[in-house]
Amino acid sequence: MATGDQPRAGGPALRPRHAPERSCVACHRKGPKSDFVRVVRTPEGAVAIDPPRSVPGRGAYVCRQLSCWQAAIEKGRLAHSLKGPVTPQVRASLLEQARERYKTQG
Image (cartoon, rainbow, N blue to C red; front, side):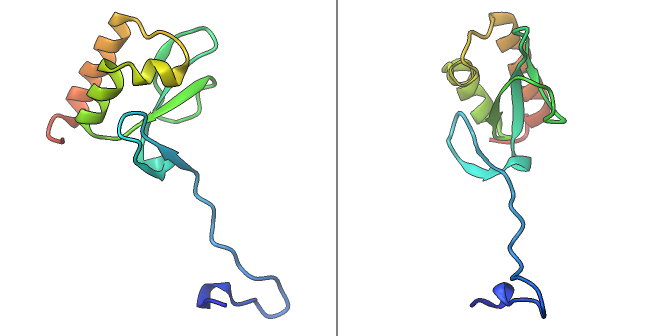
């Protein structure tokens, strides 16, 4: 048994806390959910960034890098993951938001 797997006196072994893992739709990097930005397609069909990660609907995750946002939007990976079209106006809006947030990054 590893040190962290030692049973407590009179109790079961402690397990490491589970952290949800997601992957970027553009670069496919995997990591904790908190490392990514969620984009959601609501049941009504609207597509938007979901900062609290709580809006109901089909979600897709993108890294916090401008290059990933560009690939996700321009190569259609976001639309594919959201299982529906993303209008040119929404694509432009998402790309503009990404440029503002991540302009100093890759």
